[in-house]
Image (cartoon, each protein chain N blue to C red):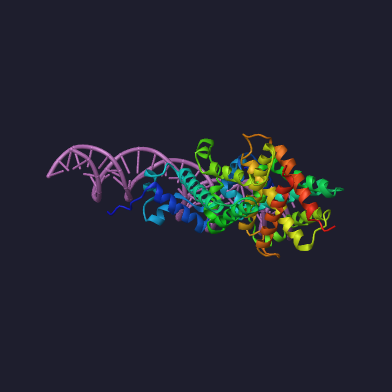
Length: 189
Length: 189
DNA sequence: GCACTTGCCTAATAGCTTTAGGCAAATTAG
DNA sequence: CTAATTTGCCTAAAGCTATTAGGCAAGTGC
């Protein structure tokens, strides 16, 4: 019989595609096996278990997202950087809802420390260099930005803003304006 | 054999407790049957299916949360009301993480329209009466507040702020201050 | 006290997860 | 270039969850 050529990497990529198509929750070892036209047990030579699969997809998504944000941020500062960061985040979530959900998976501490999550934190802090905040305020601001972006994107993905005026895009722009103004007001400079 | 006295209401309450103990994702018809020392199939006389169970828990959580928020809001206005709303929300999530997760379940439109979700929306708008915003701005603000509160609470529950200074409580206070200032600045008055 | 309804049970099907052990294909060694 | 070894996918099997169908006994209404 011809071998399917499974590897952890191919399985992870296929799992990410599956997540975008049917939702991260529905990503299952069985569904993945079907996609490769292979028996379920065969995947267990390449994956420790289903949690391993989910974790790999999460790490892939975190990398991709960090790469996008880094590219968007290059050469920008102040409100420009803030908007670029926010848009990169939101666009990724809309293009890849399954991967975005994966990126929110709770990782165990060691895995998290070795993940691209670290770059995310660094980039968020980098944005705030455009606003002169004291050290504790910077942390508060990091937490607030994370909350707003994650909160907005997940409410939007859940369809929360779908059937009401004004358009979600307008609210997004208003919120970015507001956050910029807020941070400038908090600035010590 | 002695009857267990199952009803949809008792099952829903027990399901909510189970959610708080082991997480909403782990709430399963089987686990619930074990808790009542009853065979799994017996629950199907009281519940349509497992989705029905989850939906009932979600509706219960939405009611409870709305009741709490309403009580917290009574007699308050302006920043006081904003903080009371936010704290009620956050406290509920910390006391009842499983129910909070349930409250975020995506409901189908008719169910959602008949749920306490409607009260939540009304109360959020009520808070904003303390700040003079134009109609479209009020919607933007509703969306922003929803995003920040939901985002912060879910990041906090996921343990995102656990092992870093400053304390989460400080960030929360700073964020509420900031939101109040932001809304006052946006005010047309 | 009897008929009826209701509540929980047994039985059975079906899907997902995971482990153990087997055979054949690919790779390495002599 | 064949023989030994490793690797990749398979079959088989057990355990858990969800769901439906049909049965019997406990409670209810007359």
